[in-house]
Image (cartoon, rainbow, N blue to C red; front, top):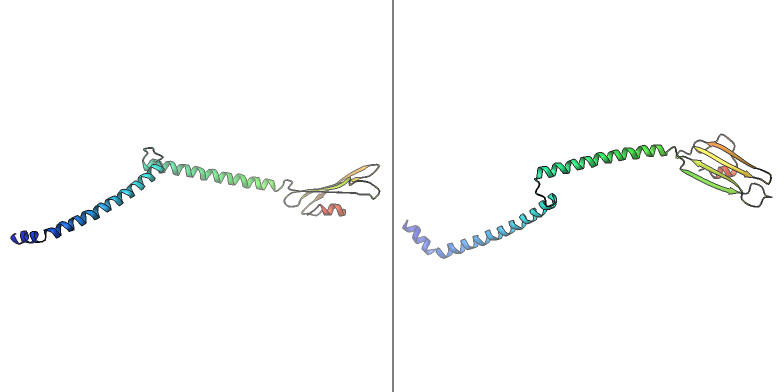
Length: 159
């Protein structure tokens, strides 16, 4: 016991310096952990929006909202696809060409008009304007071609 007392007396200054150094290191670690805790508290406040909800409630609510949004998005995609399929049969391509059918007439009063869907199915309407009368023709079109003989102007309004 006497040896320990003697040893402590001889190295008391060194022991105190080591303990002070250890205390300084522990204080720096404490401050560092305090900063990390403050950052975590800020994140927690962000996620809970300042309310005192517990994490289970918050995560359950968020997951429920995400699942509802996902289901709504899938429903909207299905509706969009159905509308896309429906639009395939609607008129999407319209082209008009005015021309002078007879050389002795003044203006471009005759016309050819194509009304086609996505698959180039539809109709070509032509109106031939003359001094005495006006004639209108409708010719069906399937896949960009008609079973009827087409004039040059009617061919020009087809894709």
